[in-house]
Length: 165
Image (cartoon, rainbow, N blue to C red; front, side, top):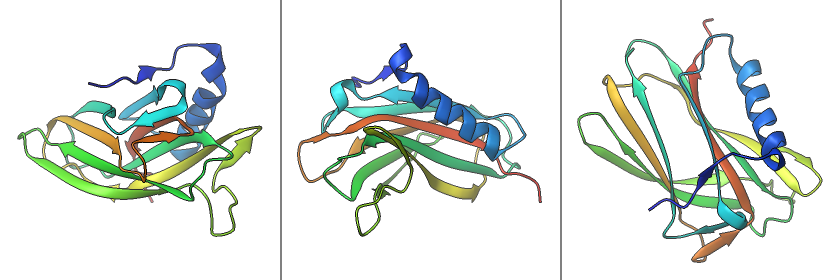
């Protein structure tokens, strides 16, 4: 069961603005998919997952897939491990563990910070094609050092066509 909520109030305006600005600067073509999820009370529990789902019709187009992570400036770790499960239209699944790099080796955030909130855009796949048309689902599970990770506030997923070169 997912306990994440869609963005809904003015407190989250800055996060939404950063995400929209990133999309507008990333490409001039329409976004295939974009969703932003709030992690309740900034605490991501091991049993909670983030669910993103979208439909694909064009398997000839090249795409880019990114995560936008809002985290506390004082997040206690350099990175956060997540387990991803991608469900394809044919019902097959692909699992992998990823490291979301939030800070460099000396503790500087990779993204931009405003006060106590930092925003970082992480490219999951820089250039790819969907292998089949239909419904896709990406589930993210925190795979950290503790059962509850404090300091991750929002995660957004966006998928957009690669700019033509």
